[in-house]
Image 1 (tube, rainbow, N blue to C red):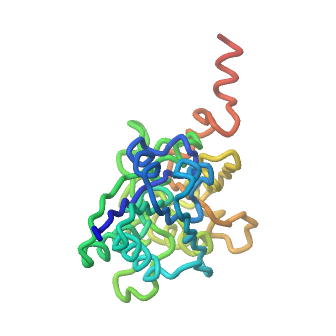
Image 2 (cartoon, one colour):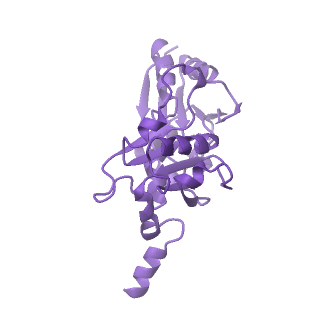
Image 3 (cartoon, rainbow, N blue to C red):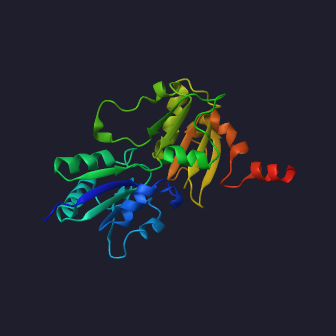
Length: 260
């Protein structure tokens, strides 16, 4: 039997309309779809009706399937001659563990293709009206995970150095770690008055954006909603939201239309 093929496909950040054309092509030809928790449910309808759908979602303390089991699942179905789509939220190579899955496939001589997706790191701030760079306010940005692998040993992120290394910080995941992260950023020289956007369920109808400061976030007594899925943006560009927000309530557009 011929060996099948695996596509590591980025499903985007939540809005089904942000799925790429190439990703849809792969999904519509799939025999097997292995999908994550944050994949928009409507995208699964794009797969053939007879395609096998396998849920492999993860929460911080609850993994439906361990990563190694997911790797072996992809390999087994491909060796059975099937066209396998590994459908992952955001982009598979941006904190999506797609690199590990690609390594496993390569080591097993399984043909694969990586289909990049629109990363939540750029899409979610954009839907909240926050440009990551701005000629006047920010010439650099970094995308950082707030939830590192505790088994890595030495080499953990040095938040005190990141504090002033770039203008805008985008922190993915790690909701529970944000107060500690904020405290380290302030300790590293970032002003406690720096605005912070906390964006939940970005790009979806459930999107919620809360604006605070680093000092608020670092305050252990502060009452903040820090539940996942959460994208956090730290930097002066956050101050542009009230003027540029267009998705979750559009006061700027409404004002412009009223005065046109």
